[in-house]
Image 1 (cartoon, rainbow, N blue to C red):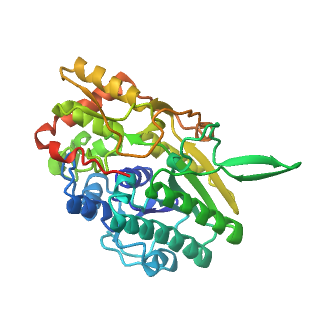
Image 2 (image 1 turned 90 degrees about the vertical axis):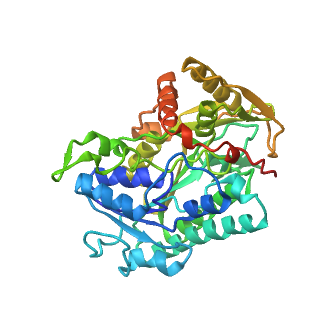
Image 3 (image 1 turned 30 degrees about the horizontal axis):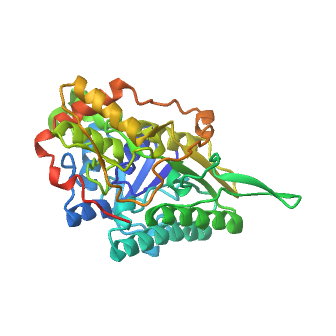
Length: 411
């Protein structure tokens, strides 16, 4: 099995990805600087339940499975820390065996400030977003140029790069005929936040690295993700005995991912379910016709796995649109209301004055065949899936803070 380096492995998607590949026998090294945790503390926003540190998680995982996840706590905007993973000079914060595993065959790149609202709180947070996201990506492509041009990068981009154009959204590329000549270009981008703008710049930086140095990169234009449970997060509660100790060593949620329900870091469906459980009117912005592509957290894991199994070619920037189905905000609110009422909750919907500058009604027709053709089997947003999310949130209802749900960040 290959060596996989996961950048930003403490986050909502990074930690499930870390366990997913470790559970399948890969050598996994994970790095994070606790940006998201620290930002949540600074901004005083809520998590649904407490989550152990990254090193504690790796130790728990090792106890339960016998599989090592090497951990580095470090800031990847520092080029020397990034380069250490390819030069062999990495300093592990926790590992069973601190011997260098070797240059990674695959890099999973999640190491970015992931929030549109955060990027527009004020100029300070805009600067943090720009410097962190662009320096990390730039440091990565130069490390690959200098040490390992054959390493495959799987980068989590965003469908938000495209905006809401009045034409069909293709998978990353567009053929254009102009004055009798044809060529292929990156599909036009028009982001609606500074965070999404940095993701456009990521794509441009990676495309430069592919053109100049024949790097091999898969850029996944991901829609908003929802969900909590994955196969790996439930390992602690499933095992009856681990090395002579009971599976009760880990609380049932200790291997679960970070779950935010606030306006800044919480994704929309996760927020709606929490709002429904605590009786906070669902925060629909404006008319609620904003339409996007969505996917279950388990499908993110499938998508990065299939991309790793069938990597981009040398000198290729391969782009997939990583969504499984589309919904408007009204669709999600009405579904949350219906499922909530079925479970005994009085779920109300509140149309707020939109704090964002965005089209509230628009055309939206993205293509998303590429990952399905690689073998991804979608998890659709069924009533059963929603009910399970409600049940998980219910267990932590007493700790939910209504005051952090909506801050009204405007742009």
